Length: 264
Length: 222
Image (cartoon, rainbow over all chains, first blue to last red; front, top):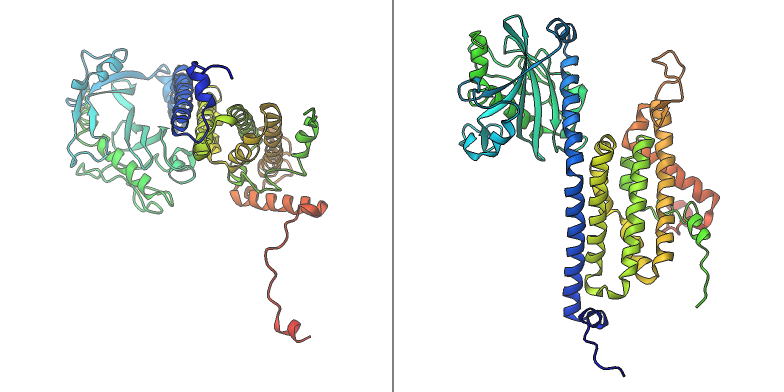
């Protein structure tokens, strides 16, 4: 017989499979190697995935704009470009010191976020950024179209969407869902064009200025409603909350008021 | 020791006579969900075959050192990690198809086909035969998926791989698409017919009935 083997690796392999040490060590090694593999793949591939998502969002914005009746002609008239503005949500005016280029950096600073108390927090976000980037289409001096990004807590995760509002700030011109984690085939149908087609023409609020928009349970029965999705009540409620929050006084309300006063 | 293994036989046997989907009825969930078009069916097939072959190979390599008490969890951890890597690769390089496949790539982890192969075959055999066997199994699954995907896309949309094959009635042709083909029930029907056809041609695949219906009163009286 050879002397005792001092190589710890070979000693581990020589242990009987049922021994406790080997069980724990094998479990640990397998988990460690798998964890390294998964993290490695995620880190290496993240930039490509982020680029994909950005391209997709851009495609959705242009599809949204193109899908609004009369938009194509309007775009050509105005030179075909939407202007990008960073808005200070508190005051409803263009933010002086934050530009689209520095927006991401500004939002990394927790001081630029406002915590929401549960009463205000219709979208289930917990906190709200103080700055948001919106796109505007001007027709001469007046704003004829607004693209407002919004997000809210859905049933399966965060829903990100871009809502297009007409210049009267009360008529929806369209919506594009840019990201969601809702149940495929149920709540996931919010990304389908057939459902989103219910939005154009829907009104947000009544004459008194109170927001009455909601996703109906079943078919829409008033000018303020869009059709609900069967089997996706929670998702519908989340979309209602998201729209009400972002177009209300804690969201883009001050901006919309400024546009109505033609101060913007 | 010099027992030669008929690798070609292992590969081809699993296409029809040992097909994991139609004989063992494994992996049905994904076979129903992702076969609305050939492109998704192909991506899913390739993903599953890669995961199955690699995980069977890895399990086979470490088969002498997997403690029996934790063997299932070790196998699942390996399978799940490979699935996440494949999912990330798809999200990076094939974002559209990855969206169409939604959760089903992730569900490869729980596909009984994968665990069945690692548990039944990979744990007892050396890496090469294991990987050939797993690859053949993946091919059998892919064959059924592509067949279903092809039939459903052809009759549901008049297309194959998104290219129009049958001119649609809407566009002046003669073919009216069968929308049912794009819904999940049609996959059940097709798969059922396929299993029935294969078992009629090869009666040895049919399972023995588990119980016979009780005799009726008239039969009993005779």
